[in-house]
Image 1 (tube, rainbow, N blue to C red):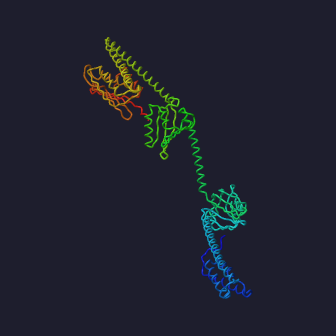
Image 2 (image 1 turned 60 degrees about the vertical axis):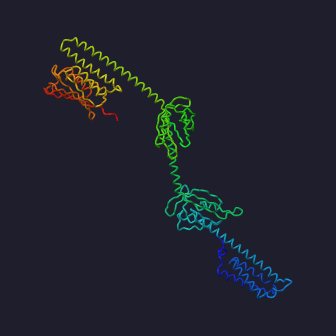
Image 3 (image 1 turned 90 degrees about the horizontal axis):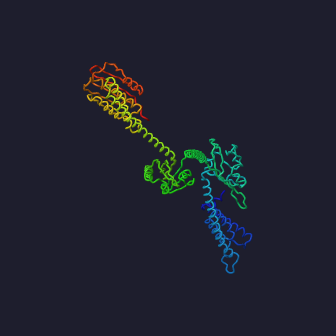
Length: 589
């Protein structure tokens, strides 16, 4: 392809020599003409030499040819005929025509060379642009499929670093693959189809095995014919781009989209199964979008709905609006999650309870979240709370009546005690009064507790010491309990009866009748164990001795019931100490 390069270069010394030779040839031709026809014109014969010099050597050499030839012919052959006047003869006319003819020839040859130079430069630019295409590109000439031009990137894209393609038939050596793995024939390639049938190919995907490393890559191929007059195919242009990375990225994107689609479907199923509504608040426009489920919860048509934030505020219950607004504003300001449970009213005015969760998307200035209607749960909780309250009231009333009944029994027993003269009967009634009084005291402690299920040990022990101490004013009963424990009533009441029996025994047997003294009750808790110690400074008991009687039986029975271990120490004249240990249940959690 291309024009003759001599038409676009600057004149050289050889061009002037060639122009001089043309002038000499013109003079020689004139001499031959003179010998054949002496009267013929002499200057016009130079014009062919001027044209040749202008075309192949340039305007300046053409001027040299014209001037040199004209001077030589005028001096050698024309002579006086140029000076003859009037009339004009053929020689004079020849001279007059020669000047404008030379001027026209020089102008024409100058324009021809300039046009040729411009065309050559444009063609060179186009060829260089074509070579720099970032892909494999080629131009095939019609009809034989000769390769006219290819891009620089062709070898790196196709992996043929040494092989050259001269004709379209050579494409059979390239590695195009059909979807079933069959290699392409030469006529299968898009550029050959464009050359032979005029087909226009846009973005055809082609699997290609590179001959250099055997890798199979993906190419995107474009091809089309270059048409001449009457639609005849003059050439075909083809381009191929390596899109392997793009195809892999598209595959990863499709996989990611499939995973996200599946995740979205599972999330939607979970939201539907959990009876959740979805919302999204745009912090810039203050518009909130509700999905169909949430719109239905608010008594609106079951379809995606967009509301202003002011519209949403109208759904909120007035009692919760200020508090809920503060909670939401705080969550947004801190950039964290939002959680609240509040009462709202539907479009029909019905009060409903909703649990609302949300999270701030700071990069897009939005808050998204879910809503669940918990009205039925709240109603069940309120009903349960009412039932628990009623139960607590009944238990309180029952304990109160039991305490009063026990106190009535104590009062009756004391009246009976005042009328009994027999010492043994009097002693038995006194012990019975103490035991009933201990039970009444335990119910009083239970009545004072906050949950009607556990008893404050410190207060129960202090009341026991106070009540037992009133039985014998000569003996001082001291209570040292500051452990601050709440013990389950099922263990605390039997424990109180055991302590009451032990205190009563100490008051009646530690000191002789009328002898003053002290009995000390000490309580301590450590490592999940409650320890009690009842000590006196009285007459003491031999080590290991146990007084028989109902009290001893009561103590042993109650101790087995709640798992209390009892150990006594005493020596005559040095008092007695009884130690109790009760394992407490570990705290929840």
